[in-house]
Length: 463
Image 1 (cartoon, helix red, strand yellow):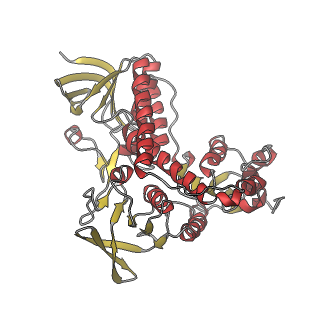
Image 2: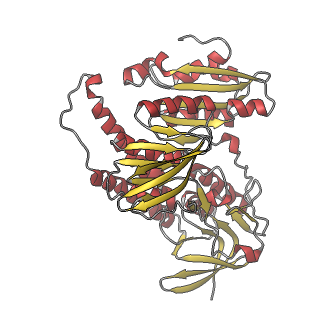
Image 3: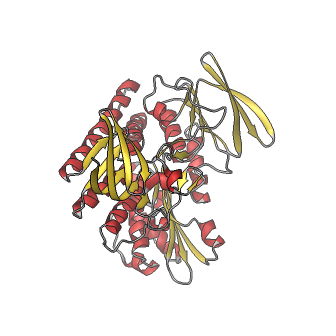
C-alpha cells in the first residue's frame, strides 16, 4: 500500500531539505527522497568543502606574508592530505546536521532513487526494495552535475572534475583549468596558492565572464600577479593522454598550440539531473537538461514544481533555498513572493574574492538606463590597509533618474561578506539617499560601500 504525503521533495540539497523543513513547519506531512547524500552537492562536494580548502590556502598565503605583519614563520609548509581531511570533516559535520534538522521537523527521509509514475505518484527504489508514494505536491530538487565535453572527459587520474579536485591524490605541478567561472577560478586559486604552475583557459573574452568587465579586469591583474597564466578567447580542442602527461591542444586567434600538463581540471559548466525521473512521460518541458518553470517554480504539470540547479540559472545554493521556502509556502496556501534573479548575489571565493548583485554597468546601459557609477578603491580604506589588503575595489551602478541601485560589484578581501549590504538595499528598493544617510561603522571595510555611493554622486570624501 502506498504511503501518502502532502509533499514529497526529491533531492536533499539546500533547496530540497529547506523546502521539506519549511513545508513541515507549516503543518504538512512531508517526505524527502535522496539517492546519494543529505545536503546534496553543496554540502558534500561543492560550496562547503571548497571553502574549507580555500581557507587553508588563505592561511598558507598569510604565512608567506608573515614578514609584512612583523612576524616570523620559518619552515612552514602544508600537508595536502590533512587539508583534504579537514575539508571532508567540515562537509561531514554539516551533512549530519541536515539529517538532524529533517528528523527534528518530522520529515520522513527515504534514501533511494525516485521515479514519477503519474501525476502525484512516484516509486522509490531503496536497498530494501521499491516503495510507492503518493503526494498532493511533488518538488523536484535533484540538482546538477559537472558538464563533460567530448574529448575532455574526466578520468580521475590526469583529468579531474570538481569532485576529483576536492579529494586530490597528489599535488599538481603543472595545472590546466578549463573554464574561469566560479568553480574553475576557485580551484585555480587554491592550487596556484599552494604552488602549482597554473594556466586558466577561458572561451569568453575575459575571466569571470558573468561579472562586471571592470571587476573581471581587476581580478585578472591580481591572478597574473600571483603567477597564473590566463588565456582568454581560447578553446581546448583536444586532450592527448600519455603516461603521466596530458597534452592540451589550445586554439586561440585561429591558431592551435600544444602545452603539456600533469593535471587538468575541467570546469565547463553543469547539466541538470533530469534523467530517469519519468519527466518526459508526464509532459514536463526540458530545455538543455533544465526543467522549465514559471516564476513560482511550477512546471506546468499540476502539483509538480522544480527548484534549484535543475530549474536553471543562477546555479546558486541560496537561490535554491529561497525557492524551496517559496514553494513550500505556496503549497501551504500562504502568500508567496517569487525570487527575483536581479536580487540574488553571486560570490566567488578566489584570492581576491569577487561578489556582485544586480546589473553590470554594460547590461544596465544595454537595457536603456542612464547610469551614475561610483567606485572606491581598497587602498583608500583604513581597515583594508590595516589588514594588509590594499588591492580591491567597490563599484556601484545607479539609475541616474530615479536613484535606484541597479547593481553592485566588488573585488577584494571579504567582499563575499560585504555584498549582502547591497543585496538588502536592492531587495528593499533603497535609493542613493538611503545609502548616503546610513551610518557605516569605522574602521570597517563596509565604509567603502558608503564611499562608492558617494562617488557616484560626486560626494566622495576619502579619495
